[in-house]
Image 1 (cartoon, rainbow, N blue to C red):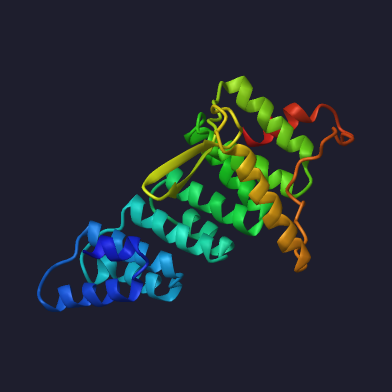
Image 2: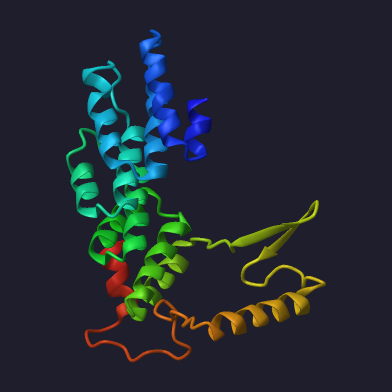
Length: 242
């Protein structure tokens, strides 16, 4: 029940249930605290999460595991406390795993912190050398900072390592039917594609009429930008991160 409340963002209800369990004599275990910390993460309850984490062993006799550390890093990073998340990783008693570094990278991508993202990526490229999600996250962050040479160098590193970037998928439900689409257009043409794009065009026209201005900051240029001085960037960025 705790996990169900946590997954659905019912943090306060999860906390109330946790304390009811404790008062009734039920001793929490590691799974219990994973659920509670996940609930705090879903609502951004940083203070409450720290209280649970700090009391795990002292009050409840449950030693924090790598999973609990990753939950805290994810919470701090998603709430914008990136320096605190990094400090938490550095003082962790055990070597942080890919989950912690991945959570930090996700937070850095949300808030555009390139320096910490590169630090997280260096560890992830060693821990998960064939996980395309880490490369793609860094490429997107480089493009947001108009660092297109660096993004290109990571694409080169992916090919050199044989990392397969699987296409993304999207789906929508109409009535009782689920319609699935491949993001890059590699799937067979959908019968109603013209109608879909026509509706998209109509919606774009409407939102522009009310003042919407698209943010093209993370869009890659259509032509190759002028390279920075300092040699072949395809290798320098890959060497720095990988």
